[in-house]
Image 1 (cartoon, rainbow, N blue to C red):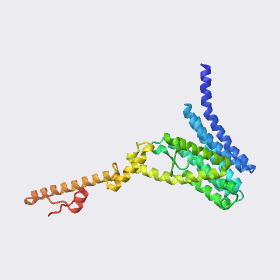
Image 2 (cartoon, rainbow, N blue to C red; image 1 turned 180 degrees about the vertical axis):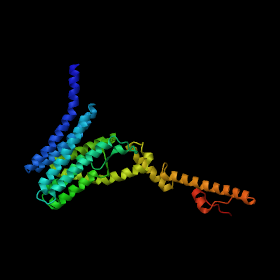
Image 3 (cartoon, helix red, strand yellow; image 1 turned 60 degrees about the vertical axis):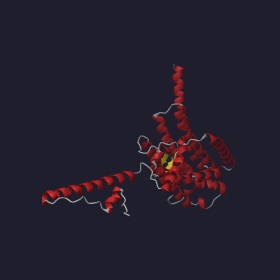
Image 4 (cartoon, one colour; image 1 turned 90 degrees about the horizontal axis):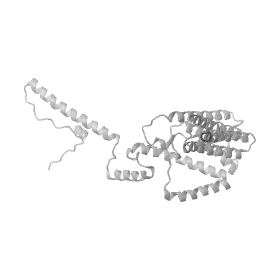
Length: 332
């Protein structure tokens, strides 16, 4: 019994230990920046991102998810991807600038707000079932990667316009705004790879590893640019899913067929089901029928008052026919 309890305690400790390693890696980036070893700063932040990706998966795999682990993960992300990148950018390019420290503070505060919103949205039910496939704003590790783009370009190509103080400051503020924005970004946690694509994906992974070994800063810059190009795609995918309820319960790999069917329906002039205008057209028809019935009732009431026999019911006007969805019949 004691051995089993010790094993369970050790299993629960492992994800938290990885989280602590992520925190230490983030703080080490600041230590390396104080010694002007900025290539080691990039490596330390990358190690922190790797640990951050592992601790949650280990907790779910070992069934060792705890409340304290979630709190440690948020605090580690704040230090590793908020405080550490802000200090590294300040020491590298913004020190001596009039607004350099302000930019660093804004970046760290936006990271804190982004993580606080993420924690509060966990227990909130969203009306869209596909929300789990997206983040709200740029997530913390990706924000640290994107914020370090000027540093990575400088380490590979040398100083240039991308390493000037005003460029680095504006870039950091832009990334801070993306963190706290409502922009939907893809969550790769729900991505599933088809079996026929596993081999080509492994080849791409090997190619990426070779690029990171031979030209690491160029590889990180390319990955950052690819991620930035995916943000507009994420936005349009979120809007497309919101407008096509028929694709909500469909697996991701089958949504392409749903999209082709929707395009074919548009070419044929068919309307997709479950759209808002269907309900709007039904309510408009009900109002038109109600008005038509009220007019007949009014004619009967006038007969009782004036003593005149009511004439034939008036035909609906052109506007009423349009509301009812009727077309005028042409006589030959």
